[in-house]
Length: 459
Ligand SMILES: Cc1ncc(COP(=O)(O)O)c(C=O)c1O
Image (cartoon, rainbow, N blue to C red; front, side):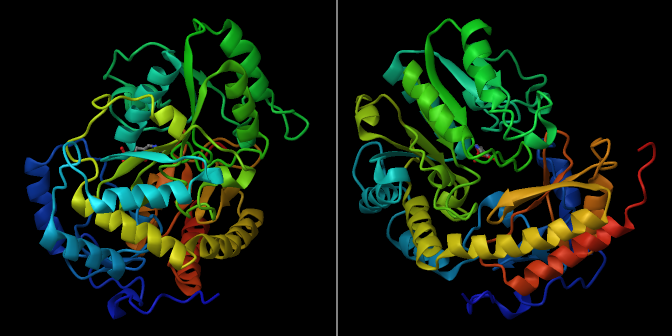
């Protein structure tokens, strides 16, 4: 497989990084000042520059600085920034129809997109789709449908989970940081330990643990942890994203599937972040042949245009009556055109396979770094969804605070974001079209920053 950049990537985006002025430059500074005056403070801006344009796996700021992007716009641009197939689909659609009136009329691309999603769904078993506008909105739809179908009202979610920042999606998100000050939350969400084997909640080792965390969910939480027995669904990220890019053992999802069947709960797989090729699979559920009842998708689904969806077993979706759920913009013309083009591009260009190859290369290099540097505690991931957990020292595993290191990486021209319950996990999640050379350049910058990090105090 050719692991160079695709031909369509702009010339300026091939030489990365390319910093002309120390960021933030004067143009960025002026825009940032206006933004701070008028735009909500709620956005958690990591990078102090203003977005101007982007191509492939590179982003240019208002001052002409070019950065290498290891975040893909938070796992959105799987087929690359400004992919021409997506851009053309948007342009063509804009000339014909923007708002598709999905609530009141039919639209060809909505039917076409739903057909495509059914064909690529896990086990080809999920035959019906509802389109909304974001990941969190899709999670809300999954909550509603699982309650409607099972007549239950309680849910299981996992420690470290992230499902969005509104309503029930926020209620099922586990971190205090995101929830503080916004309660009360609806009752009936029970959090179970995710198999975070590097920091096992039960101080066990896999595989001798026998997945004690799932036993605990089944025997302790569901029996004695307070549920009323009115259970609707288990929400799980097959590869946990914001929680720290955690890959669970291969038995985990199949065990949840069995548990849901036994207790007549729906299994909801939230693949908003790990799906559509990022983990090297079409859907991460496929890696264990697990068929969920509801698949939640978003982010890469729209190729950069806001879009989320639930893809559901037909027998379950069909219980909803007309009007059971609705979205003014669901199935929007631009979103359908962009999403269809993006998803087709991901598969026509075999990007899941490319993610596997590039991911294996990155993992090898990162594991070599792990043996060299005491502050790299763990390297884990699949495809191009890789987490590097930073610690004060391997022996204590005490989380290392990384904002200063992240700032240094950015000033060298590499956009890296973090995840994890302690915010100490660097993500390697570039657009899947990144070249092997660019990946290596980014990893070199990362290694420089690791090397330059002073030995932590009090380790
Ligand atoms: C697994 C998962 N679910 C849901 C969401 C929420 O998606 P959105 O930000 O589009 O609402 C995210 C966002 O990061 C996510 O990672």
